[in-house]
Image (tube, rainbow, N blue to C red; front, side):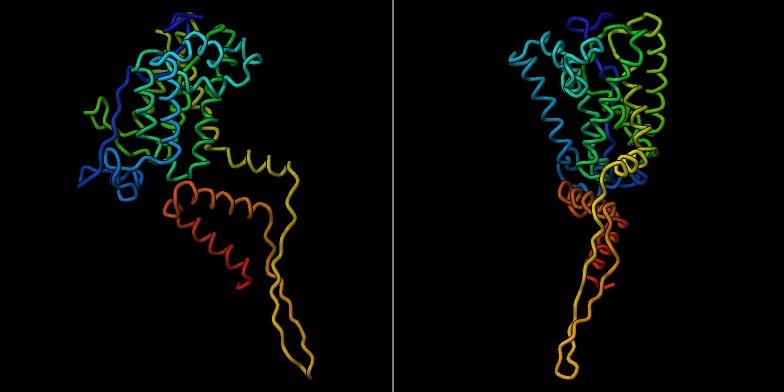
Length: 324
């Protein structure tokens, strides 16, 4: 494929762009940003806030693979790109590659460092808002979507190998910008910029670079089309993901509706009679929603629940006890 680091691997990284997260506090803080983004819900920890469980695990996994390949040399870089990296011609030979490629980074430390900076700052607020399981699913779906963009564009880009996490991270940045568009980040750790403008400019630059890549210019070995694929996947997921999941659930066998019976006894003429009451049935979709909320509590704590989710749990609890 077109030239890149190593032996033709196209990087998915933001090494030429520097970002920082502006610490909250006083009038210059995150008065319009995500709760817990260094603020009240996430005090303590590095840079004034606490990393969330799945962000920690993803950071650890990425750095562990980098150390194994580029520091200790347990895995040869060429082998990692060939077997773990994503390449359209090898997709059926290496069906795991749409996931594993995003954990492989180039030998240059800057590639993984700037990717992980983005995960470090933009990931925790989303995980707090969504819960760990949903955040991880979103991250992986965006990464897979970014990889499959190479399949769609194979006619123009050819048999390139793609490595790096920034397709998934482009999805994370877009989700952050859609949820908190007016939150500010520090460009080059100096210039405050609203995240919606930052992400918009990145997408425009990637569109321009992808246009050149489709015309035969390798663009320095950066897979900008995969960045766009991650962003597009994120947008579709956020706009239509609930509908898609609901349709898939309807295709599966439904759980039987459950009813909870409560009994009370009364004595009449020496005989004991039983009055039975059946409350409203709880269907499979409602139980699925309860499961998702309980998973969120397990992953991020009860403080991560929204007011709507807490009210829903209270309502379901009353229905289960038959106290409505």
